[in-house]
Image (cartoon, rainbow, N blue to C red; front, top):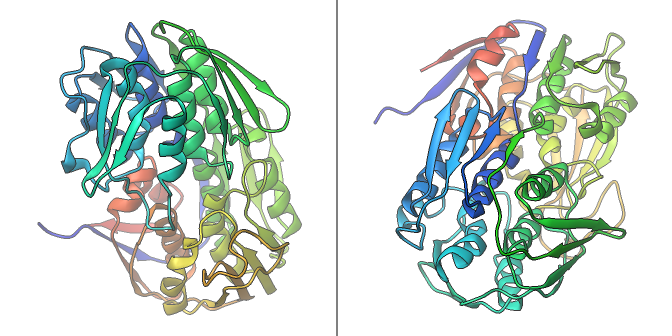
Length: 433
């Protein structure tokens, strides 16, 4: 099989309009939630990304029907034909572990292969396993995956050690049909979590949000089908705004509400960006150049970890020293060597820079970076290690001197809606081979 790659020739400032669809980080979770309905559910404004195809295969493997048409996905629940996700799906993404709760409700037993996704750091299954055990499930972790069994899940109190998005989703999907009340403490509150909870509420779930990261769920016997329209992908929106800024152009992003980008807009404004914001679109430019910044990633409402990869490239084009402190994933900076090979002046450290000590303090994790700008980037031959790093490589190639060849493009296609077409529409000379 011939390796897919992109060849990019820098073509000046990127300008134009981009419309983002629903979030990659939301659509697959909604598809899993729809398994619990007694009738079909429809998800609109869905992105056409590889993640959807992978999740479709998993649902069909266990007996759930999936119909896709344009930006619309209809999930048709059916009898569970196989209470386990096939081992062929091992390591493809993080979705299998989220199917444990629904499969336990539907079949009383479940098997899922080990989680995958981007190699950006540990994604401990402990939070998920401990939560399901608290609901009364028998869970064993084997070499091939996770086996679980439960005649009935019973509401409980879950105290998450860290506001993990995935663990919060697991608890929600288990709690909505568990017997009695479940209280989640230290829950994640990312927009995609709220969106999933609202979808479950449309299906008939009883969910309330309490102060101090608490979510309270009263289990119900039955959930119905529902319809929803996904809000625009905040990670994709930010990425394209930065694409304009880093090349000295301006990109107008449609489809993502301002409230999903509050922290990002403020951060970029501090670097010298100017924004025009309406109810329909957001546009950023930096006619007077870019200033350096010190940014720390954090759980919502902090600066999202998925925003920092394009930001790192932007730092290389800011006039001065910038600092990035990653506190969510310990291996998120694994893409930095690729940027260094293109001429980026970046040094990484295992200490906490640009913010207070985080949970990776006193560990060997390289989770802080100092970036010197303005760097003259040069074209290179780069392999994309994950979705977000892949986008940063495209940005670096767009601003570099000379052509670049990017490999591992399946990563970016797994997470971004039609990226080739979007970049070409902005004026980037990109050849997909």
